[in-house]
Length: 191
Image 1 (cartoon, rainbow, N blue to C red):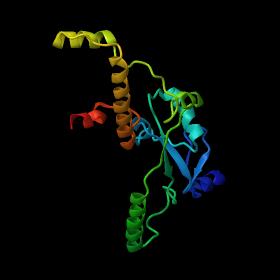
Image 2: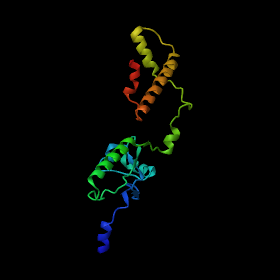
Image 3: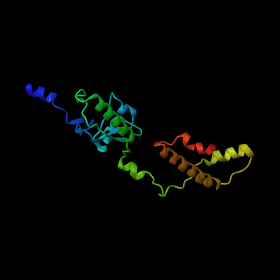
C-alpha cells in the first residue's frame, strides 16, 4: 500500500498520454492536435504523439476536412509545485514563456490518405480540358438577352477564362490557410 502512495506522489515524467495509442508524450516533446474545434476543446482535448495516431482518429470522428496541427508539450508537468519558486522569477519566466509561445506559431500538417494525394492534380500536371459551362444554358441566356446565336467555340474560350479565375481563387484560399474555395476568394472580379 505504501508503494501505491509513493507512486502517486512521484513526479510525472511525461506530459500526457496519446489519445490514440496511449503512449506517453514526453515533457517538451512534439505532439499533434486536430484542427477541428470539437476535438481540441478543453473537454475532449485530444493529443496525438504522431500524425499516424492522428489519422487513426479520423474515421471515427467523421470530419470533412481535418488537419494535424503540430504543438510542443510544456516542459514542466501540470502538477509541479508553483509555491517553491519565488514570485519575481515566476513572473519573469511566465512573461518569457508567453513571449516564446507568441513567437512560435503551430505548423499545420494536413494528413491525407495516399489515394487522395495521388489523385489530386499538382500545378503543371495535365489537367482535363473539358468544357466547364453548360452550353444550352449559355446559348439560352444570350438568345433571351440579345436574340443572338452563339458559336460552339465560345464554350472553350469561356472554359479557359473560368480556369484562370478558379486558379486565382484557389491561390486566395491557400493564402488564407483554407482548403475550401469560398465566394470571397472571387472578390477580385468586382474590382
